[in-house]
Amino acid sequence: MVETFGGLTGLQWALLGAAVAVIGGGSGSAMGITYVANVAGGILTEKPDYFGPMLPLVVIPGTQGIYGFITGVLVAFVMKPSAGWDALTGTLGFQIFLACLPVAFVCFVSGAYQGLTAAGASGMVAKRREEMGRALVLPALVETYAVLSLIVTILFFFVVIRPAYPG
Image (cartoon, rainbow, N blue to C red; front, side, top):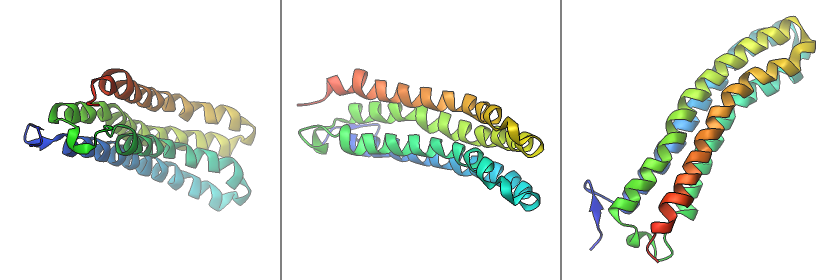
C-alpha cells in the first residue's frame, strides 16, 4: 500500500512541486521578456542597429524559466528514490513539494520584475549606447534573488530531504 500525506501519494506531491516550479519560473520569465521586448521593439523601430545591445536585455529575464526547468528535472531524475517512486512516502513527497516553492515563487516574481528593470535599462541604452555595461548590471541585481532561490531549493533537496530517502 502506498503511503499518502494529505490525500496525495509521494509521487503526486513531488510532481506537483516540479510542476509549480516550472510554471512559476516559466510564467515569470514570459512576463519579464514581454515587458522588455515591448520597449526594445519600440527602440529598434527607430534604431535597428541597436539589436545587438538590446538582445541581452531581452534575454536575461528568461533565466528564471531555466531555474524552474532545472528544478523540475531535479525532481524527475534526481529525487527519485533508488527503490522507485512507490517507495517515496507521502511525507517525503510533501517535503519535495515544499522544497520546490522557493524557485516557484521567487522566479515568478523576479522574472517579471527583472523584465521591468531591463525595460528601464533599455531606455538608458537607447539614449547612450556606451552605457550598455552598466545597463546590464541593473537587471542582473534582480537575478541574484532567483539564483539564491535555486540554491535554497537544491540545498533542501540534497541536504535536508535526500538523506531521509528509503534505500
